[in-house]
Length: 342
Image 1 (spheres, rainbow, N blue to C red):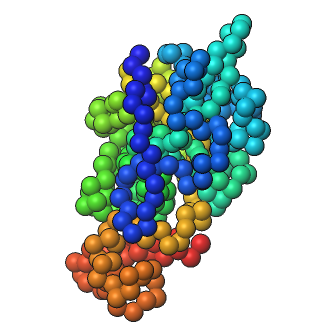
Image 2: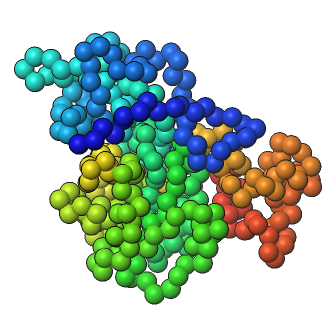
C-alpha cells in the first residue's frame, strides 16, 4: 500500500483581505500551545491515520492494517478531543502488540461541526468530523435538490471554511424525471455535480473515477443515501442502511460516528453521521461573506470596503439582485442573510 502521507503538508493560515476559496488551511483553534501537535515523526514512532475514535482510544490505519491504540501519557485528557478521523498520528509500538499515540501532525483541512447542529453524536460546541480531506461529497436526493438548496449552501460554507473542495452528489436519480433548477448555480461556480443511482448504477463509475486517489468525506442529512452510495463504490464495505420514513421523508442515523475506509489503493472515504440541521454560528460573521464566491468580484464595487451586504447603502451585491441577469441569485442571497442573522 502506498503511503498517503509521503510529503509533509503545508499548513495555510486564514487571511481576511484576500481569502482563496478552496485553499487548505489549519483548524481555526490555536495550535501553538498544543504539545501533542508534532510537525515530523518522532524517533521510534511511525505514521498512521485515524480511522475511528472511541471513548479513550483510537483505531488507526497503520501499515495497511487497522490497529487499536491508546493515548500516551504525554497527551493530557484535555487533548483527547483534539483528535479526529483522518488525522495523521505518530504511533509507538510496545510489547505484546500494544500501541500508543504520542501526537499528531497539524491539519491541512478539516470539516467541523458547529454548536448549532442537531445530531446525537456529541454535545460538544465544536469538534472536527474529518481532517485532512481533499473534497467533501454533499449527498442529497435528486428529487429534493431544490428544497434542500439552502442546506447545500450551508455545507458549501462549512466545507470552504475548512479548506475543502465541495462536490454535490445527487442520489436516487432513478426516482426523479425532472432536473432541479438549483443545479445551474453549482455549474456556473464550477462545483462538480454528479447524478447517481445505486439501483441503476447511473453515475457511479464517473464518481469513482473522480474520487480515486483522494480522501473524500461524505456529508448530508439522514436518509440521503450516503451508506448505499458507499456500498456501491465498494460492496465489500457492507455498511448498514435504513429505509426512509414515507411520511416524514427523513431517515434514521445508521452512522453514529465518523469512520474512514480504504476502498482502493490510495483512495479513502470517510462516512459521517447524518445531520438534521446545520449551524454555522461558529464561523465569524465578518468571514461568512468570503464563503460566497460569487460575491467576491462585485464586493470591490461596494461603497464600503468592509460591506456586509446587508444594510449598507451603495452595495454592489444587493444592486445585482435587482438585475434580471444579475450574478447574485435571490435564493443564494436569502441563504446568506439567514446565516448572518444566526
